[in-house]
Every structure is written in structure tokens, then in C-alpha cells.
Amino acid sequence: MSDFSGRRRPAHASGPRPVTEQTQAGGISGNTDAIPDSTPPPSSRVGPKVPAVKALVSILIQEGVKYIFGIPGSHTCPLFDEADASGQIKLILTRHEQGAAYMADGYARVARQVGVCTGTVGPGATNLITGVAASYADGIPVVVITGMTPAATVGRTAHQEASGIGRAPNQVELFRNVTKTSLAVGRASKIPELLRTAFRIALNGRFGPVNLSIPSDTFYDGIPFEEVDRSAYRVTRSNNVDPALVRQAVEIIAGARRPLILAGQRCLFPDATRQLRELAEQAGIPVVTPLSAKGAFDEHHPLALGCLGLVGERTAEKYLREVADVVIAIGENFEEWTSLSWDPEIITGKSLIHIDVDPLEIGKNYPVTVGIDGTIRRILAELRNQLLDIEYSPNGSLDEVVALKASWGYFDSPEMGSDAVPIKPQRVMRELQEALPSETIVFGDSGHTVRWVGRCFKSRPMSFHAANIFEPMGYGVAACIGGKLAAPDRPVVSICGDGSFLMNGMEISTAANYDIPVVWIILNDARLNMVYHAQSIYYADRHVATAFKNPDYVKFAEAFGCAGFLAERPEEIKPAVAAALASGRPAIVDIHIDPDEVPPLRPRALMLGKDLRLPEPTITRAAVQTLTKMMREK
Image (cartoon, rainbow, N blue to C red; front, side):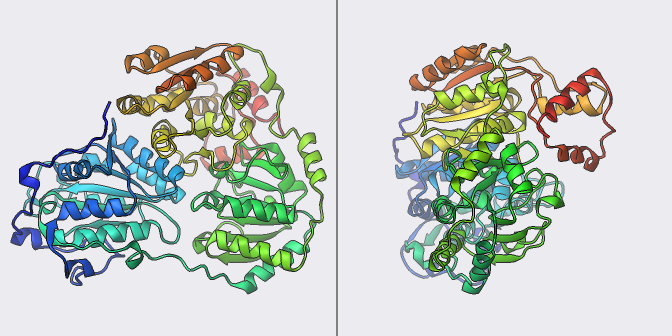
């Protein structure tokens, strides 16, 4: 176990290296947001000279960075050494850079601040790409610090070179496609300015990741540096809201019979959950969310209707289709799964009020009646104030919403009470609902597993996190470690499938190395089941590369000095989860589930097969059984 204690830097790093012509040469490449290289920042004009890496770490500390996730390489050793020597930043050595990116993302979601990850030049950097892409899709602020080869070696096929010259990949450009911007340091004196720029861009407008690539020969150069308050360089979005647009929205809401709120992912970060709850309660408006925003609204609340989508809660869809006449979409993309494959009927005949911090999302997939661009928290507060001004009272009653939820089986299905073995995944969710403390933070992953969570597990506000827009397998397996570091006093669990766990399960070693007591709850069906069932339907029950042999997960956990528990019957789940949480160690709970159980799909889901140009469904016994289960909630 690491005690994260500081240590002295080696003598060679105690002062600046001579500034050479080569380290001074060059400018900013791959950058459209920073000040041009010819304009010196304020910090370069005053103060004593310090090693650039010392200035870099000083800014990270000032920004509140407590952890850096990643794997060191020769090109980034100065960063690791200086951060460790500071005694204020803990380096978390991960097993893979993809895991580092997921952990930084998970930390950011729970801590409500920027996460930081790092990788060395070339493969270390490219290994980060998938995790950074997930953060970009969800608007999670992450600063990615990557190494680069020295300027003097560029174009000469330096070891792991990623300059874009010859056969070398262009590392800065690769990140440009999955970040808000990708910056390259040209000379050491630019490091403070560009790092501050990275934080400013990550947290401005619609949040997202930013990459900063730093050549290894710039870290120890002496540069002028003076600490400045964040307010001197941090740009914040104006809180100004167009009152006329809000008034239009209020008039539509006031004239509605049954308005409905669709609270999207950008209600979570920045956190607008309090303003969302206050608006819903003041106006008596029910709330649905996409799976990506599960936890934006307390699903135990009487006004909650669950997750909307192709594999969503039937209550959410029925209310949207059959009851609502106005939809108030807040920070929502109307992506494929949430919109039921862009079904026009979910909005046809309804007024659509679309609120978002990103104006490019407003009206993208559905025409709007009123679109309001701005800070979501401020807009929701203004909506509520104007509704108070007109003394608005809901047209419907809370009792009516509660009655509809009961009649439609809100978070209820017969399988949740099943005693069958193998265990029904619906029953697993019911047992977890009762076994996990109410303050537990849950990380979801992908495939059938996360959809069982979406359908059968009620979330508290800000207690569920998943990257369900980009939806990479293995996300929650690693992200939960970052989440636990951000919330050490709360239980943190990852509910994942076995296929997802096997992708990033070696990060259990990271948790063991630092004594981070995360619990992985593995739904074990020995399949990539979402694809397996698609093969049953579209490929005449020909199952190719979707089944595998699992290890003994209890022994797997014990091999790393962690705790392992097995549940093969429903009554064994609660004791296993309780023991895992009580162990105080990283732990695995291996739950064997029925591999033939599938989440009910909305009929519109068949559009997916047509859009993907899959073969026509085949009539086999397995296909009919699978389709029957999928369509049992028409």
C-alpha cells in the first residue's frame, strides 16, 4: 500500500536546465483556443524563474487537483516526480491508460470538479483515447496531460514518436477529435498559460476534456512564473437569461394539461438536480430521464416516472405517449435509444420546450416550440420564479400520477420476485435495492446489465453514473475507483457484466494497491448477451464469438488480496453484498444469472435492425422465445 508520502526530488531536478535554442523554438500546434504563441502571458513577464514542471504542478494544486491517474513513462517522469514531491497530489498507478481515463472521469462526476489523467507519448497517449471519448460525449471535464518527444528529435523516428511526421501518428490531432481542444506546448514558458487554458476550456460552456501534450525536454527549463488567482484567467458563463423566452415557456406550461419534464445528462454536470426538483415540485410536473441521466431526479419521488428509452421503464414511455401534451427537455440530446430510434410520434402534437447550455443541441432532432440557451441552473430558477409570479397551479394532481404509476407497474415486474435458479437479473436488482445503503454510489457499465439497472433499480439523486452515450464496455469497472476516491465515506459499487469486467478487471489491482474499497457486482452469464440475443433473432440462432469461459471470480479477487463472494441463489445475494461492504477491502460479488433472460424492448427497437441493415428476423425456436420476452411490454 502506498502512503502517498512526499519525497525529495533528485538533485538534478532542483533547478532549471539551461534554456536551449531548441527548447525555445516552436509554437502552439493543434490549438484554436489559446492565445497565439507570439503573445507572452502575464505570468511570463514577472517573477523568479522556476522549472516549468514546478509551475505546472503549482497550477494543478491551485486548481484543486488531488489525484492524477495514469502510468508514467520516461517522457512524463518529471510530472510524476514533482507531483509526488509536492505532497499534495497523489499519483494513482493504473494497470492501463484506458482505466486511467475512466477513473479521471469517475472522479470528476462524483467530486464535481476536473479529473486529471496522464499517459506518456505514443501508445500511452493513444491508450487514453476511448476513455477521453466517453468524457467528451457526456461533457465531463477532464484534463489529459500527455508526453511528447523532444523538439530536436521530431521527424527522425524517435522512440514512440507521435508527431505526425512520416509513419508517426499525430497525437495532438488524434485528441482533437475527442476533446474540446488539443494543445501542444512549443516552449516551456507556455506551459502555465496553456495549462490554465486547458482548465478554462474544460469548464466553460458545455464541459468536456482537453488534452495538453508536453515535450519531455521542456519540463526542467527555467521559466518566469508567478501564481495568480483563478479568477484572473477563468472565464465563466454569463448567468443572463432571456426573460422573454422564459415567459414564452411559462405561458406554454401554464396552458398545458399535463406537461412532462425530460431531464437529460447535462442536468448532472454541472449539478442542476436541486433546481430540477424545485421546479418539478412547484409546478407538479412529472419527470423522466434517459439512462445517461439516471439519478438526475430521485426515482423514489412521487413525480418520478423512470428512464425513457428502447429498454426503458414502460411508465415513462406511456406517460409521454398517452398523457403529456408539453415536453420540457432539459440538457437532452434526444439520442437514438432515448428517443426510441427518433420516433416522431413521441413529440408529434406536443409543444417542445428545449433548454440547454449547448445551443447546437436545441432543435437538432426535433423542432422546438421554444428554445432557451444558457446555464441550466439559472434557467430552471427563472422558470420557477416566473411560475410563482403568475401563481401557477398544476392542472393534474399528484395522486393521479401516483395512481398511473401503480397501474403501469412502475419499477415492478413479476420476475423481481422470482426464486428461479439461475437467478433472474430482475430479482438481482431487487435484492441489491434492499442490500445497498441508500447513500451508495452506483457505477453502471454497458449492455443488458446497465439496462437491468435502469429498469429495476431506483436511484437517488446524483447516485448513479454511467457513460451511456458513447457506452464503452468496461467503463464502470474502472471509473468506480475514481468515484470512490472522490467520496471515501460513501459505499461505491460497480454493477457490471462479466464481459465488461474482463475488459478492465485488472484495475482491481489498482484498488488493491491503494486499499480503495470498491465492490464489483458481476452479473455472470458467460456471454456478451446483448449481441448473443441479437444473433438469435437475426442470424438464425448462429452464435459467433459471443460466449466464453469465465474464471473463478472469488479466486480471482483473492489472488490480488481482495475479498470474493459467490451468489448462486437469490437468498445468497444480500449476505454476499453485506459481507463485501463490511470487508473494508476491494471485493467482488459474483452473481450467476439466467443467461436467457432479456430486458423488454419497446416495439420501436426493431427499427435498430433495419437501420443497421441486419438480415430479416428468422423464425427459430430461440428467436421466437427471445422476441416474445423482448416484446412482453407492448
